[in-house]
Image (cartoon, rainbow, N blue to C red):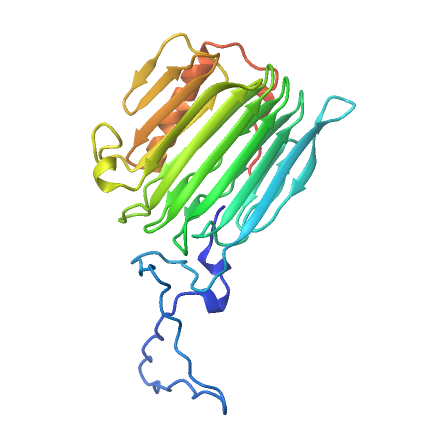
Length: 316
């Protein structure tokens, strides 16, 4: 999920020219190839692949990754929630940071083009899980589209709070973000997604996001949107001048629509709410989404696990 350029192997990093010699220091050329060893230049770009300015971290020659991670909870005899399963596979590495809190941490670059990643969440009945991340996810270009599939099952009377840091779409990326959320009776969910249109000063890559939520097999919300078509994105009917888009799905209901600058709180047909927001930057987006979340929860009775989830720890 999250990425660091230093996580790449030395032979995967972009070539950087040597710095000029300092004053009084001779410019010593690199040694010639060893006897019998040819000086082989780097491989040319793959067919259909172009150099993307500013796309630092594109790992030339890096193979596409297939990785799957999973979290599961169980109910202890004394009524406590325990993390019964915690399975990781880089770049999806999970770390337990509290009794019922898990964070995604950075252990490899990704997702890059061609990667297929999956995260599975299983919240047992009458337990709780809060899942976050320690840093934003940077989606980078590569050979082909990348994909992240998140599936979650929330049992009867259970609580899930899914609040990772934003996903940043670097220039040239082609990403699919798929969420499949299945709720049983009386399950409580807060699910937040934030997408940033490129790093500072760059146009975003492409992203197709799809969100499907059901309760007892019946649909609660089916939504999808795309980012990366400059003419469409700039339309006042789509994103306009905004650089970020975000949504929060909650299983608390509101009686009527609430509006503020850049944010809307929309009641759904079933007892659920969708908060949608646009913003100029990630800080403003988070503030608008949190206003919508507070607005949605103000008119509903608290869930039994709500006070326990409010003080979750973050890793240091």
